Length: 99
Picture (cartoon, rainbow, N blue to C red):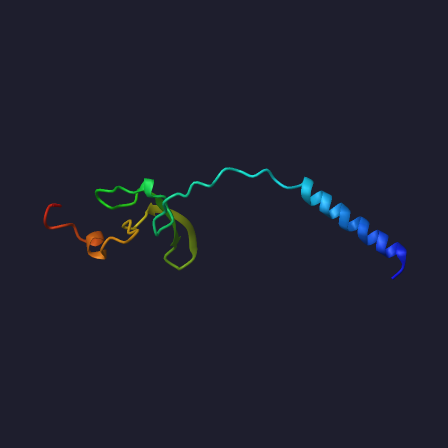
């Protein structure tokens, strides 16, 4: 190897190192995790007593001939199951009052 290519390689390495050190972003605070239902909506959009979701989702609509006609906004059909509650309590109300 000739000395010119070693010098050029060293300069490129030094420039990349300096650019990487100066170009780093400042560390941000910790990301606060948000509780999300299985449908992808935050749990704040769910009614805890009824277990229903107040969010809306876009559904595809089609004409009678089968051509795509756009989106229709409908209520989300999820039931807010986030576990580890028994699945029976999600789809059927409790028969007895809580003890």
